[in-house]
Length: 130
Image (cartoon, rainbow, N blue to C red; front, side):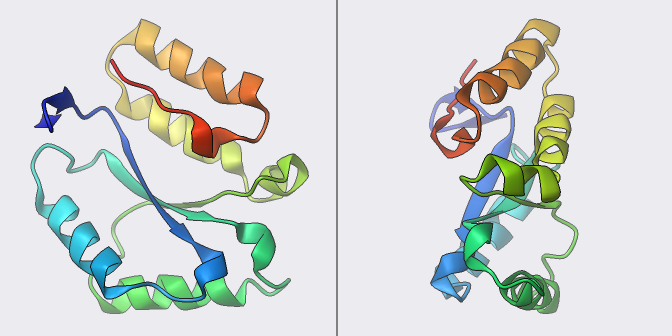
């Protein structure tokens, strides 16, 4: 349950929708992480910069198809933006809820839930270590 000497509690693998493509390095990294016992079931994908996508979510849907085609469709996917109003529409709280459920220690879980709330939309800068 350790990575680089640190315990893995939860892992968010972030992919920017603004880049308009998923790189091969992302596919390889996700595949390796998906198979690693120390992160299995503790990893999700977070599409960032969702405010850069169009109203039909074209980039998001395209990214999901690529991930599915490459056998990575069983990893939970969430969306995020720096825009707090858009995060409400994207159901950003579901990411926080999913992440907190991965944490075994109740005090750690409660502090994890609290930090993003006070940072108001800047969750990309939140780092939580036990």
